[in-house]
Image (cartoon, rainbow, N blue to C red; front, top):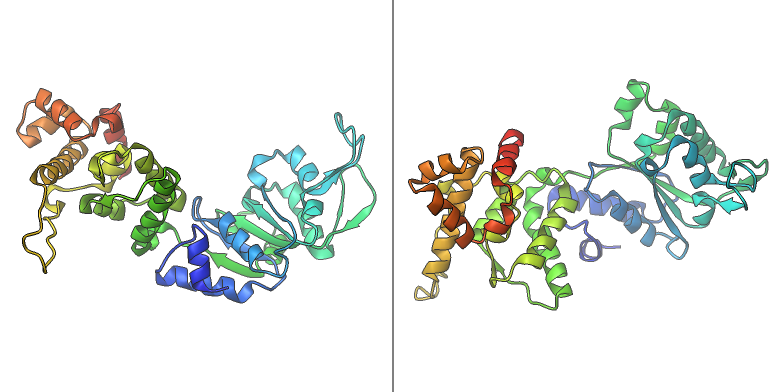
Length: 348
Protein backbone atom coordinates (compact mmCIF):
# COMPACT_ATOMS: atom_id res chain seq x y z
CA UNK A 1 0.00 0.00 0.00
CA UNK A 2 1.53 3.29 -1.05
CA UNK A 3 0.74 6.86 -0.03
CA UNK A 4 -0.29 7.53 -3.62
CA UNK A 5 -2.78 4.65 -3.57
CA UNK A 6 -4.32 5.83 -0.33
CA UNK A 7 -4.69 9.45 -1.37
CA UNK A 8 -6.18 8.54 -4.76
CA UNK A 9 -8.70 5.99 -3.55
CA UNK A 10 -10.26 7.65 -0.50
CA UNK A 11 -11.44 10.87 1.04
CA UNK A 12 -8.47 10.69 3.37
CA UNK A 13 -6.69 13.00 0.97
CA UNK A 14 -3.81 15.27 1.83
CA UNK A 15 -0.25 16.36 1.26
CA UNK A 16 0.39 17.91 4.67
CA UNK A 17 3.03 16.49 6.98
CA UNK A 18 0.31 15.33 9.39
CA UNK A 19 -1.46 13.32 6.70
CA UNK A 20 1.78 11.90 5.28
CA UNK A 21 2.46 10.56 8.77
CA UNK A 22 -1.01 8.98 8.83
CA UNK A 23 -0.43 7.33 5.44
CA UNK A 24 2.91 5.92 6.59
CA UNK A 25 1.32 4.56 9.77
CA UNK A 26 -1.41 2.85 7.73
CA UNK A 27 1.23 1.29 5.50
CA UNK A 28 3.11 -0.10 8.50
CA UNK A 29 0.11 -1.60 10.34
CA UNK A 30 -1.74 -2.94 7.30
CA UNK A 31 -1.00 -6.62 7.80
CA UNK A 32 -1.08 -6.57 11.58
CA UNK A 33 -3.97 -8.19 13.46
CA UNK A 34 -3.57 -5.91 16.49
CA UNK A 35 -6.43 -3.70 17.66
CA UNK A 36 -6.42 -0.13 16.31
CA UNK A 37 -7.89 2.89 18.12
CA UNK A 38 -8.70 5.81 15.81
CA UNK A 39 -9.25 9.15 17.55
CA UNK A 40 -10.69 12.07 15.62
CA UNK A 41 -13.40 14.69 15.60
CA UNK A 42 -16.63 14.04 13.77
CA UNK A 43 -16.09 14.21 10.02
CA UNK A 44 -12.34 13.55 10.00
CA UNK A 45 -12.71 10.19 8.23
CA UNK A 46 -12.50 7.51 10.92
CA UNK A 47 -14.63 4.94 9.08
CA UNK A 48 -12.83 5.59 5.79
CA UNK A 49 -9.51 5.07 7.58
CA UNK A 50 -10.76 1.84 9.12
CA UNK A 51 -11.90 0.67 5.69
CA UNK A 52 -8.44 1.42 4.26
CA UNK A 53 -6.77 -0.59 7.01
CA UNK A 54 -9.04 -3.54 6.20
CA UNK A 55 -8.67 -3.28 2.42
CA UNK A 56 -4.90 -3.31 2.69
CA UNK A 57 -4.67 -6.21 5.14
CA UNK A 58 -4.59 -9.97 4.74
CA UNK A 59 -8.26 -9.95 5.81
CA UNK A 60 -9.41 -7.90 2.79
CA UNK A 61 -11.21 -10.86 1.18
CA UNK A 62 -13.37 -11.29 4.29
CA UNK A 63 -16.16 -9.04 5.62
CA UNK A 64 -15.71 -5.50 6.87
CA UNK A 65 -18.51 -4.70 9.31
CA UNK A 66 -18.94 -1.15 10.60
CA UNK A 67 -21.28 -0.31 13.44
CA UNK A 68 -21.88 2.98 15.25
CA UNK A 69 -22.27 2.24 18.93
CA UNK A 70 -24.07 5.57 19.35
CA UNK A 71 -27.07 4.36 17.32
CA UNK A 72 -28.26 1.74 19.80
CA UNK A 73 -29.73 1.97 23.26
CA UNK A 74 -28.16 0.16 26.18
CA UNK A 75 -30.72 -2.63 25.85
CA UNK A 76 -30.15 -3.14 22.11
CA UNK A 77 -26.39 -2.86 21.73
CA UNK A 78 -25.64 -6.29 23.20
CA UNK A 79 -28.02 -7.97 20.76
CA UNK A 80 -26.57 -5.98 17.84
CA UNK A 81 -22.97 -6.86 18.63
CA UNK A 82 -23.31 -10.42 19.94
CA UNK A 83 -26.62 -11.59 18.48
CA UNK A 84 -29.44 -13.34 20.31
CA UNK A 85 -31.12 -16.72 20.64
CA UNK A 86 -34.79 -17.34 19.90
CA UNK A 87 -36.92 -16.37 22.90
CA UNK A 88 -34.21 -14.17 24.44
CA UNK A 89 -36.74 -11.30 24.59
CA UNK A 90 -40.16 -10.41 23.27
CA UNK A 91 -40.01 -10.44 19.48
CA UNK A 92 -36.93 -12.69 19.24
CA UNK A 93 -38.64 -15.31 17.08
CA UNK A 94 -35.44 -16.85 15.69
CA UNK A 95 -31.72 -17.03 16.29
CA UNK A 96 -29.83 -14.03 14.96
CA UNK A 97 -26.05 -13.61 14.65
CA UNK A 98 -24.50 -10.36 15.85
CA UNK A 99 -22.01 -8.08 14.13
CA UNK A 100 -18.99 -9.95 15.52
CA UNK A 101 -20.16 -13.19 13.92
CA UNK A 102 -20.96 -11.43 10.66
CA UNK A 103 -17.38 -10.12 10.56
CA UNK A 104 -15.84 -13.60 10.97
CA UNK A 105 -12.42 -13.73 9.35
CA UNK A 106 -12.50 -10.00 8.63
CA UNK A 107 -12.63 -6.71 10.49
CA UNK A 108 -15.18 -5.08 12.76
CA UNK A 109 -15.15 -1.30 13.18
CA UNK A 110 -16.73 -0.12 16.42
CA UNK A 111 -17.27 3.58 15.84
CA UNK A 112 -18.32 5.88 18.69
CA UNK A 113 -16.81 3.47 21.21
CA UNK A 114 -16.92 6.41 23.64
CA UNK A 115 -20.73 6.09 23.68
CA UNK A 116 -20.75 2.47 24.89
CA UNK A 117 -22.36 2.29 28.36
CA UNK A 118 -20.22 1.05 31.26
CA UNK A 119 -22.38 -2.06 31.65
CA UNK A 120 -21.51 -3.09 28.10
CA UNK A 121 -17.83 -2.19 28.32
CA UNK A 122 -17.02 -5.18 30.54
CA UNK A 123 -18.57 -7.52 27.95
CA UNK A 124 -16.50 -5.95 25.17
CA UNK A 125 -13.41 -6.39 27.33
CA UNK A 126 -14.15 -10.11 27.64
CA UNK A 127 -14.45 -10.42 23.85
CA UNK A 128 -11.09 -8.71 23.32
CA UNK A 129 -9.43 -10.90 25.95
CA UNK A 130 -10.92 -14.28 25.04
CA UNK A 131 -11.97 -13.78 21.40
CA UNK A 132 -15.29 -15.43 22.18
CA UNK A 133 -18.87 -14.17 22.42
CA UNK A 134 -22.15 -15.41 23.85
CA UNK A 135 -25.41 -14.55 22.18
CA UNK A 136 -28.02 -12.80 24.29
CA UNK A 137 -30.18 -15.48 25.90
CA UNK A 138 -27.71 -18.22 25.04
CA UNK A 139 -25.13 -20.24 26.96
CA UNK A 140 -22.95 -21.44 24.09
CA UNK A 141 -19.52 -19.88 23.75
CA UNK A 142 -18.79 -18.93 20.13
CA UNK A 143 -15.19 -18.25 19.06
CA UNK A 144 -14.70 -15.24 16.76
CA UNK A 145 -11.74 -14.48 14.52
CA UNK A 146 -11.96 -10.75 13.83
CA UNK A 147 -9.68 -7.75 13.88
CA UNK A 148 -11.11 -4.97 16.01
CA UNK A 149 -10.80 -1.30 15.04
CA UNK A 150 -12.42 1.22 17.37
CA UNK A 151 -13.23 4.86 16.67
CA UNK A 152 -13.74 7.63 19.21
CA UNK A 153 -14.51 11.34 18.88
CA UNK A 154 -13.43 11.95 22.48
CA UNK A 155 -10.22 11.43 24.46
CA UNK A 156 -10.73 8.02 26.08
CA UNK A 157 -7.87 8.59 28.53
CA UNK A 158 -9.67 11.68 29.82
CA UNK A 159 -12.90 9.68 30.05
CA UNK A 160 -11.04 7.07 32.13
CA UNK A 161 -9.94 9.76 34.58
CA UNK A 162 -13.56 10.96 34.78
CA UNK A 163 -14.80 7.43 35.51
CA UNK A 164 -16.77 7.25 32.25
CA UNK A 165 -14.67 4.58 30.54
CA UNK A 166 -13.06 1.43 31.90
CA UNK A 167 -9.30 1.69 32.19
CA UNK A 168 -8.72 -2.00 31.37
CA UNK A 169 -10.82 -1.71 28.19
CA UNK A 170 -8.95 1.45 27.21
CA UNK A 171 -5.60 -0.34 27.33
CA UNK A 172 -7.02 -3.28 25.38
CA UNK A 173 -8.14 -0.89 22.63
CA UNK A 174 -5.11 1.40 22.67
CA UNK A 175 -2.65 -1.07 21.12
CA UNK A 176 -2.15 0.83 17.86
CA UNK A 177 -3.45 4.38 18.44
CA UNK A 178 -3.97 6.71 15.49
CA UNK A 179 -5.07 10.36 15.71
CA UNK A 180 -6.69 11.98 12.68
CA UNK A 181 -6.02 15.75 12.65
CA UNK A 182 -8.96 18.14 12.22
CA UNK A 183 -9.03 20.06 8.97
CA UNK A 184 -8.25 23.38 10.68
CA UNK A 185 -4.86 21.93 11.65
CA UNK A 186 -3.99 20.96 8.08
CA UNK A 187 -5.31 23.87 6.06
CA UNK A 188 -2.81 23.20 3.28
CA UNK A 189 -4.94 20.17 2.40
CA UNK A 190 -8.11 22.24 1.84
CA UNK A 191 -7.34 23.05 -1.85
CA UNK A 192 -6.47 19.40 -2.51
CA UNK A 193 -9.69 18.19 -0.94
CA UNK A 194 -11.68 20.89 -2.73
CA UNK A 195 -10.34 19.79 -6.13
CA UNK A 196 -10.98 16.14 -5.20
CA UNK A 197 -14.64 16.64 -4.29
CA UNK A 198 -15.50 19.13 -7.03
CA UNK A 199 -14.10 16.69 -9.59
CA UNK A 200 -16.21 13.90 -8.07
CA UNK A 201 -19.52 15.76 -8.06
CA UNK A 202 -19.19 17.53 -11.40
CA UNK A 203 -18.25 14.18 -12.95
CA UNK A 204 -21.50 12.72 -11.60
CA UNK A 205 -23.28 15.45 -13.57
CA UNK A 206 -21.19 14.58 -16.64
CA UNK A 207 -19.72 18.08 -16.61
CA UNK A 208 -16.19 19.42 -16.63
CA UNK A 209 -15.01 21.07 -13.42
CA UNK A 210 -15.26 24.84 -13.89
CA UNK A 211 -12.58 27.28 -12.83
CA UNK A 212 -12.73 28.35 -9.18
CA UNK A 213 -12.34 32.03 -8.41
CA UNK A 214 -9.55 33.15 -6.10
CA UNK A 215 -12.11 34.68 -3.73
CA UNK A 216 -13.78 31.28 -3.24
CA UNK A 217 -10.44 29.58 -2.65
CA UNK A 218 -9.51 32.15 -0.04
CA UNK A 219 -12.88 31.82 1.69
CA UNK A 220 -12.44 28.05 1.88
CA UNK A 221 -8.97 28.54 3.36
CA UNK A 222 -10.19 31.01 6.00
CA UNK A 223 -13.16 28.94 7.15
CA UNK A 224 -12.55 26.79 10.26
CA UNK A 225 -14.50 23.69 9.00
CA UNK A 226 -15.98 22.51 12.32
CA UNK A 227 -17.51 19.58 10.43
CA UNK A 228 -14.11 18.75 8.96
CA UNK A 229 -13.79 16.77 5.70
CA UNK A 230 -17.46 15.77 5.74
CA UNK A 231 -18.54 19.42 5.84
CA UNK A 232 -16.11 20.38 3.07
CA UNK A 233 -17.44 17.54 0.92
CA UNK A 234 -21.02 18.73 1.47
CA UNK A 235 -20.01 22.28 0.52
CA UNK A 236 -18.46 21.04 -2.73
CA UNK A 237 -21.52 18.94 -3.54
CA UNK A 238 -23.73 22.00 -3.04
CA UNK A 239 -21.55 24.01 -5.43
CA UNK A 240 -21.73 21.25 -8.05
CA UNK A 241 -25.52 21.12 -7.80
CA UNK A 242 -26.17 24.88 -7.89
CA UNK A 243 -23.35 26.49 -9.87
CA UNK A 244 -24.40 27.27 -13.45
CA UNK A 245 -22.30 30.34 -14.24
CA UNK A 246 -19.25 28.65 -15.76
CA UNK A 247 -16.97 29.73 -12.91
CA UNK A 248 -17.35 28.94 -9.21
CA UNK A 249 -17.85 32.35 -7.60
CA UNK A 250 -18.72 33.71 -4.17
CA UNK A 251 -22.42 33.55 -5.05
CA UNK A 252 -22.16 29.78 -5.47
CA UNK A 253 -21.07 29.30 -1.84
CA UNK A 254 -23.21 28.60 1.19
CA UNK A 255 -23.99 31.85 3.02
CA UNK A 256 -23.01 30.35 6.38
CA UNK A 257 -19.53 29.48 5.10
CA UNK A 258 -19.13 32.85 3.41
CA UNK A 259 -20.04 34.82 6.54
CA UNK A 260 -18.00 32.70 8.95
CA UNK A 261 -14.99 32.80 6.64
CA UNK A 262 -14.81 36.49 7.55
CA UNK A 263 -13.98 38.01 4.15
CA UNK A 264 -12.65 41.56 4.46
CA UNK A 265 -12.70 44.17 1.71
CA UNK A 266 -8.92 44.42 1.74
CA UNK A 267 -8.72 40.70 1.01
CA UNK A 268 -10.30 40.97 -2.44
CA UNK A 269 -7.60 39.57 -4.70
CA UNK A 270 -6.41 41.50 -7.76
CA UNK A 271 -6.83 39.94 -11.20
CA UNK A 272 -4.26 37.32 -12.05
CA UNK A 273 -2.61 37.83 -15.44
CA UNK A 274 -0.08 35.27 -16.73
CA UNK A 275 3.37 36.86 -16.87
CA UNK A 276 3.94 35.40 -20.32
CA UNK A 277 0.80 36.98 -21.72
CA UNK A 278 0.11 40.52 -20.56
CA UNK A 279 -2.67 40.83 -23.12
CA UNK A 280 -4.76 37.97 -21.67
CA UNK A 281 -8.43 39.06 -21.58
CA UNK A 282 -10.13 39.64 -18.23
CA UNK A 283 -13.89 39.95 -17.91
CA UNK A 284 -14.36 43.28 -16.15
CA UNK A 285 -18.05 42.58 -15.45
CA UNK A 286 -17.28 39.21 -13.86
CA UNK A 287 -14.47 40.66 -11.80
CA UNK A 288 -16.63 43.54 -10.55
CA UNK A 289 -19.41 41.14 -9.55
CA UNK A 290 -16.90 39.08 -7.60
CA UNK A 291 -15.55 42.13 -5.76
CA UNK A 292 -19.08 43.34 -5.11
CA UNK A 293 -20.10 39.97 -3.65
CA UNK A 294 -17.06 40.01 -1.36
CA UNK A 295 -17.89 43.49 -0.07
CA UNK A 296 -21.55 42.63 0.50
CA UNK A 297 -20.55 39.52 2.47
CA UNK A 298 -18.16 41.60 4.57
CA UNK A 299 -20.76 44.29 5.28
CA UNK A 300 -23.42 41.78 6.32
CA UNK A 301 -20.98 40.01 8.63
CA UNK A 302 -19.76 43.19 10.29
CA UNK A 303 -23.32 44.47 10.71
CA UNK A 304 -24.52 41.21 12.24
CA UNK A 305 -26.83 40.62 9.29
CA UNK A 306 -28.59 43.98 9.59
CA UNK A 307 -29.23 45.03 6.00
CA UNK A 308 -29.84 48.68 6.89
CA UNK A 309 -26.50 48.91 8.69
CA UNK A 310 -24.76 46.95 5.91
CA UNK A 311 -26.13 49.43 3.37
CA UNK A 312 -24.75 52.30 5.45
CA UNK A 313 -21.31 50.67 5.53
CA UNK A 314 -21.40 50.35 1.75
CA UNK A 315 -22.87 53.87 1.38
CA UNK A 316 -25.83 52.69 -0.68
CA UNK A 317 -29.60 52.54 -0.11
CA UNK A 318 -31.06 49.48 1.59
CA UNK A 319 -33.22 48.75 -1.47
CA UNK A 320 -30.11 48.94 -3.66
CA UNK A 321 -28.36 46.42 -1.40
CA UNK A 322 -31.22 43.95 -1.92
CA UNK A 323 -31.00 44.38 -5.69
CA UNK A 324 -27.24 43.85 -5.67
CA UNK A 325 -27.51 40.75 -3.47
CA UNK A 326 -29.76 39.22 -6.12
CA UNK A 327 -27.55 40.43 -8.98
CA UNK A 328 -24.47 38.79 -7.42
CA UNK A 329 -26.28 35.47 -7.12
CA UNK A 330 -26.38 35.61 -3.31
CA UNK A 331 -30.16 35.67 -3.07
CA UNK A 332 -30.64 31.88 -3.03
CA UNK A 333 -28.07 31.55 -0.22
CA UNK A 334 -29.62 34.30 1.92
CA UNK A 335 -33.11 33.10 2.66
CA UNK A 336 -32.77 34.48 6.19
CA UNK A 337 -29.59 36.54 6.01
CA UNK A 338 -30.10 38.43 9.28
CA UNK A 339 -30.44 35.22 11.29
CA UNK A 340 -27.61 33.41 9.50
CA UNK A 341 -25.18 36.28 9.68
CA UNK A 342 -25.91 36.98 13.36
CA UNK A 343 -25.33 33.32 14.21
CA UNK A 344 -22.14 33.36 12.19
CA UNK A 345 -20.81 36.41 14.04
CA UNK A 346 -21.58 34.84 17.43
CA UNK A 347 -19.72 31.64 16.57
CA UNK A 348 -16.86 33.21 14.61
